[in-house]
Length: 266
Ligand SMILES: Cc1cc2nc3c(=O)[nH]c(=O)nc-3n(C[C@H](O)[C@H](O)[C@H](O)COP(=O)(O)OP(=O)(O)OC[C@H]3O[C@@H](n4cnc5c(N)ncnc54)[C@H](O)[C@@H]3O)c2cc1C
Ligand code: FES
Image (cartoon, rainbow, N blue to C red):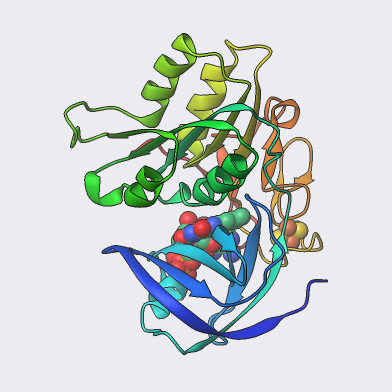
């Protein structure tokens, strides 16, 4: 099991009214797509994807949702938190001409991925989609990288209304990508899987979020039907051969009690 580290928050960057990146000065051995289990010593542990990781410093970008994340909003630089990890599978980094498709607050791990792919000389087109302009994350950071950057909102904040899947559809028609990486809300990823069925030979990898408790493959809460894959160990990044077989994908997930909850289109 990965060692627990208790560490002071080095910096907190306000990304939007409900999104913050918490930075830690620590040499974390991690690859894009992996996550840490973070605790505030009061409200248990929660999983968060690594959005940035470079020499001696890493960050996780957190959406304020319920009790745990709201409690983090009271923290300031210098306060102690504790984490274990990095855990899970990572994106493969094998693409040479890559399409990265992000949705909402699940997009930040694609920033870590973009940087690593660029270090390997890959060409990247990144689509950043969200409901509104306020929900669109990491815009300036992506614009600073040497990649083709597309952004879109459901609300049409930049002229055109639509989703990142709409942009991905157009890009796939016109370009010859060798790899597609996706991180977003499950119904958006389901739409991406449907779209990618038209491109039989194109490899892809998706980053999944399921309710996690132990993160080390013991409790079974994060398994996904019908393969029984433990997303904390064999995931959270799954490749096409696995994603194509998932019957619960886009239909339901399990809550803290292990009970099925069906996704509702918003
Ligand atoms: C692999 C992975 C990576 C994640 N990366 C990020 C990230 O980078 N940034 C981010 O903001 N969030 C991320 N999440 C989700 C994050 O763990 C939850 O948003 C957080 O735990 C919410 O806790 P809460 O008490 O504030 O809210 P709650 O009110 O308890 O929950 C709000 C939502 O978060 C989900 N959630 C709550 N607890 C867990 C848990 N233990 N495991 C998985 N989902 C949970 C709930 O199902 C619910 O949909 C990730 C989840 C997983 C599984
Ligand atoms: S969270 Fe316990 S097995 Fe994955």
